[in-house]
Image (cartoon, rainbow over all chains, first blue to last red; front, top):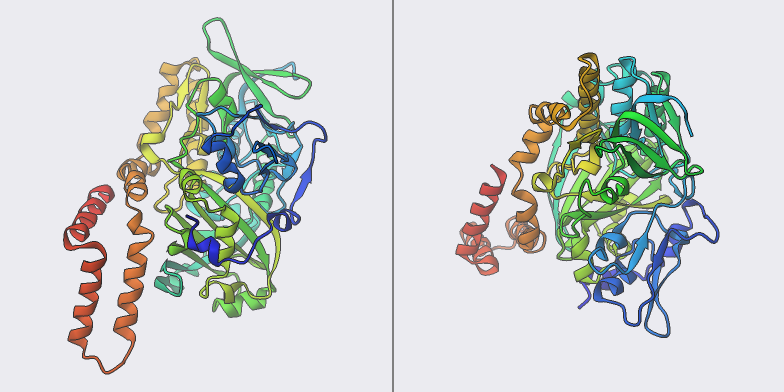
Length: 103
Length: 434
């Protein structure tokens, strides 16, 4: 069951929040990859709402996909799937990724 | 990458890495510091509160030019339900002192300033350089690092890992385990800008006085966590964080939780008409004493968040980071002067010195708190509701006599938690706290 805090909050598009941020995207070299899978584990599925940048989504085949451009490099997805080993997580190359103006 | 041999390599240019690098360079050691961000601070997130004492021990006159926002004269602790808060506020003119004790800061600006001091002390800083691996000799002593700068290497007598909560280098080198989702929090935060006069009138401030609010309650939707709101000169930092495994189990997204917090009737007016200019997220290691990994070995030391140095109860972290960084630096300088090798047995001095400071004493004192908070979620849901109900019963004047009101309040607590439950919680809290 979804918590009331979310139910009561207005619908939030995380993209609008990320729009405020500065990034240097390393085009064509995503720093997070999801390993090929048929059916995602519960942990992998949970990334569709635990990721604070909304990078994870489910495709038509029911598999979890990632678009890492808006990633804020928090590491939550790596920690959540550490046991299932379904994602490969690295830092972006030096200088790339999120660039906090305020932090 | 760099031919010369260094006395020390510091991985990371946050508060812990900067403290370590500065301390060593000031004493004449040759130090290389590596930072993966474009500039120091570009990857770093904090509330943020700066604790003067920890920085004063490194840079005594930091107030002369550090980018400080507001000195804190008022602390508000709130327990919240959906409609209200019950608050404990402390405000004192004594905090308007010549050398204030706590300041709000903006980390990207503060880290740049700290890094400038580090470089002035003689440290060689390379940004946009991610350390990918530790290099070891045949005795498996750490002797340097490999980076993603054309696979370049650098060598030193000792490597200090100030790589933050997400420290992959130490973890992938087997120096410490992966973070446990039960003992690490995910916090999200926004920066809301307002004219300074508006902030000052909204929070009853003059000049550079500041207010901080720490909040708990139904705002975390049954999860273990807290919210915060800090006043800066021309902005407000507002955020909320919960244990990662709670987010995964609960089905709530962190940004929805933040949005609900911002829309709480007690918070919303404080942010009215502000302009949000950044959204950030970061992990906070909250496992406390029992989560502290191996802190030293042959040729390496761990400082700051990478070593789980956070006091979750008091929301302190950057002061533990600076203190562990300083003490790591001082230990290395001391060993160097004695011409001792940077081996595990000698670096054990770091831990001995840390044990004598507030860092280890506080973490030890609260060693049972993380388990208590995570195992007793009534603290975050039920109790705030009971406190609020009690306050409302007490303050509403409606013809009911006071003795009946008292009875109603006691009854609500017994009904909500049962008498054994109440006594049990008090006992567990007392045991975890001592």
